[in-house]
Length: 376
Picture 1 (cartoon, one colour):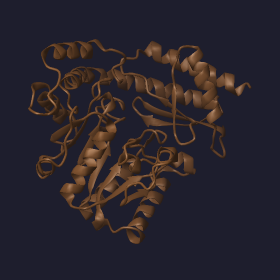
Picture 2 (cartoon, one colour; picture 1 turned 90 degrees about the vertical axis):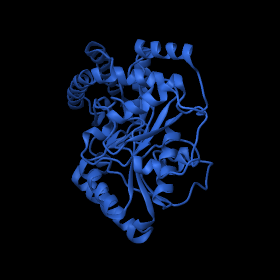
Picture 3 (spheres, rainbow, N blue to C red; picture 1 turned 180 degrees about the vertical axis):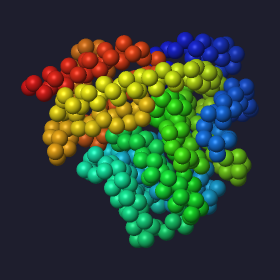
């Protein structure tokens, strides 16, 4: 909910649309779905020109993968360890943020190959070393497991979400882009969590020179209404045969009206989001010098991960620190959630409508909660 709870512009747009027209089941085009697609084309990366709509992020990822496989004519997919792409039977195959999401569902889909994603802090490496290691492993995969001529796409989150809030190093995405161009592979960015102002730009891809061929969007797109989208170039979408994919409720008129209101409103909030981000990173950096429990602070914009550890030198994850902090915050009317496979990373994601005063209040409370845990 990047625009916060019940943003008045979104609520008003939904009310107006409910009185006009509720649902078509994609039998015909209506104005809000056309307008939503047109507006997306104005804010997404340059190669993204045409869009389809779905209900959830997982469905958008599934559609992006289906589109790419069909058009490229290959069946292999490279995903990256630590990613979260959804929980449907297809998308759970691409998800490796935590093994629990796959438990009880094997065998998962075939021809999905998992490569490492740079996790410098967790590995005790510099960013440069982590990138070098990941590219070395990827090239070993191409040598030993699958030839790149069998790969349709690299599917990647430019900022890993559930896996621990790790932004992709720019050098890593740049090298992936080069490999993709070299071997005729497409690059799919999963921006379901990182889109619509979450990183204080429209999309995380705005922070990088390496751009995607296909994009999957969701979560903040309609500020709580069930909507997601996937997009690619006109050439790719037009090469997808009619009837290759479909949906009943995807692109619902009311959800699309809400999305248009989000896009009408969000642009004016991005400067404030950048201000909030600068303030948050400044505060977190100071807290990191005062709390031995804070091992790492990372992220982009207002997509900030704070990793809690029991030992700075060994970087040992401390999920109990998070659990204690969550209980402390909840007792004082602040909700925080975790991420990462060990449940030890604070997922700090304030709405873009948060005030500086509210931000400081939340960080003061977290500061007190960490002190309370460290005094035990």
